[in-house]
Image (cartoon, rainbow, N blue to C red; front, side, top):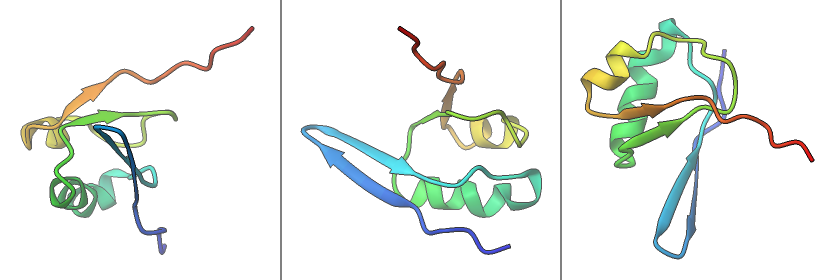
Length: 71
């Protein structure tokens, strides 16, 4: 399956990389993309679809899934 290319957004001194949700089958390519953009922290906004160990092995810190804020 073709996935859309990552999109980088900069705001003041912060950078965000918007990507697809990888699977274990696409995790190597996903991790290479993260390293290419210099990602150091990964924040999920959807359910996990992959094993986090290979990402952490590359020195990328994974935060817990962000929860939707409800008023």
